[in-house]
Length: 114
Length: 111
Image (cartoon, rainbow over all chains, first blue to last red; front, side, top):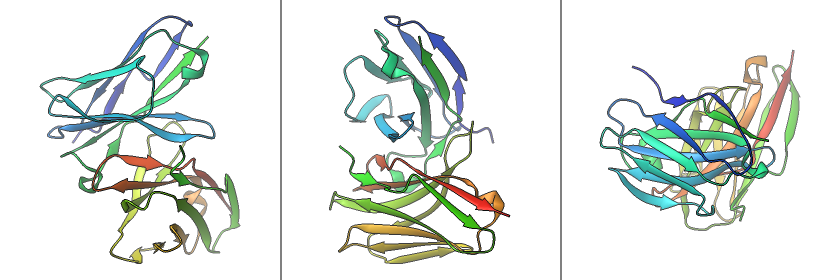
C-alpha cells in the first residue's frame, strides 16, 4: 500500500511569506502528526490531528497552524516566515491516536526561507 | 525543553563490532520508548521499541535496554554492518501521546 506522501518535496520562500505543506496519510490511518527537523535540534513535535481535531500541540508560536480534512489528509501552514523556519518538515501517520499504534513517516518537505 | 537527550552527535565503529547508542530522558511520565533510523532524504523508520514495564527488548541484531531509575536507555547493534550507517533518533512518549525526540546520533560503520 502507498506510504505517507508529503508535497511538495522542496520549497523556497521569502521572509514574510506564508506557506502550506500537505500530507496524505496511509489509507485507513486517521492520526497525523507533524514534526520539524533542524540540525542539532532533532525532531520537534508541532501538532497531532485525529478525526479532524487537534489533539496535541508542541511548543511553537501561533504562526504555525494545521488542519485535518475528513479524508484524514492534513495541511500545515506557516505564516510570516522567518529565516529560522528553514527546516525539514515531517509528517507521520498512525492508525489511531497514540504512538503505540505505530507511526509511519513521510520523506518530508524541505523548506528554505531566504 | 529537551526532555530527551542524545549527548553523542556521532559515533564511529568498525564493521562486526558492537555499536552502543545512548539516550537520557528527564520526564518520569514517559512510559514508552522507541528508536528510529533515518537515512538522508528519507523519513525516519521505526527500528525497535520498549515499554517501561520491561528492561530489555531484542529484535535480531538490535537490542534496547531501559534503566528507569537512571532514566537512561541504550540501543545495541551487534554485529554492526556498513548498512547500519544512518542517524539514529531516540524517542519517548507519555501515556500513548505524541513522541518527543532526541537530537540524533550519526552512526558510521566502517568496513
